[in-house]
Image (tube, rainbow, N blue to C red; front, side, top):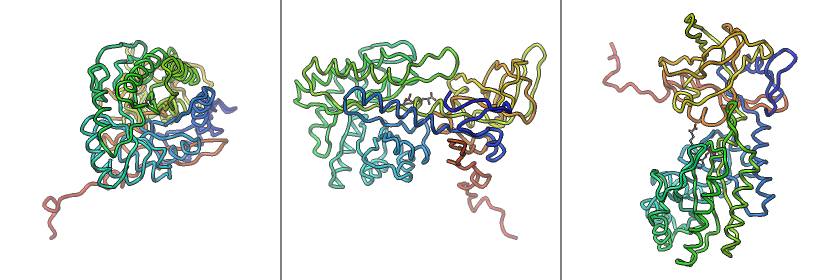
Length: 438
Ligand code: LLP
């Protein structure tokens, strides 16, 4: 998919770059990002919204992969940006991302984070709870500012990947419940706070969702709420944000829809609901993360040791693992992979791919069919663009890999490989523990 193909040497090539060359130049493990595919996904969202005729913002959920180069691409593609911490906000600002297109999420924003965002002049805060309403109003007041907000509501639609449960009240740490009146109360409180400007509401129903039904249900609920608020409180929402969660194909059997179909389902449901209610059509925002970058990412590893337990299993170990991709260990996530330097070779055995961490759960792929992999071969694991680098750790004091962006035969470093100095750069030996001078 994307710009990936097998070249005449039988090597995997991404963005016109032979991955064996990338391994030689940048080392492994290596995250490789197919820049053209990221840009294609961004434009799929933008074009689908344009086709709806509605006003819109597509905010890339940077939690999926927050690095400055990615923020730069999001900016160039005309996207907005969703951040959830001072670190993501700082990354966006350092990349020169326009503050007015930044939206700040989170269920426990600290006063320091809020002040930083106020000083930056971000476009919108997505307020999660009653305490934040008061805090944001007070901190904005201290600076003589008025700020745009969306109220995050919990619509009572819960996506379990395939099926949806519509309950009166969702058991979630996020947002104001629609079912028990908290959402209406939050609007009333916000209306009374002088430094907050209510643009509308936000709803996010889950992640890695394949079907459109949950999004339609969420739109129905949000629209009913919008009408009730207009009738009871004389407030008209200008913006409805439907969050992210659009699924991608990791392995065979995953059945995501084209991006245009998710957008069409949402915009169609919005137009129907709001037209029927004789309500001015709101601006629609979404926040895709995974579907923007997930399938554009590939992780390249070098094969190291192996262990064969006759009649049981053969383990092949690579030079990374749960430190660069914790998703299999955390969520039992499945991935596909190929032997990238011998991509045309016939399958010879079924092996399981182990990471190098001192932990039995550090397995990347169980039961993968491969040619006979030898020490020094390259293994490419696909669809690692989202929630991989973003969730990487230094467990076992393993250094985070480098990230390269590839396009049209050119490979550019976007994140340097961590050094051993990086590993200890924040360590301090307290004076009383230091060897005393002779
Ligand atoms: N908006 C909100 C409010 C969210 O909480 C999320 C994801 C998104 C947007 C983006 O959702 P996406 O389009 O990426 O599905 N670490 C997990 C995924 C956690 C998703 C958290 N929220 C994983 O690796 O699968």
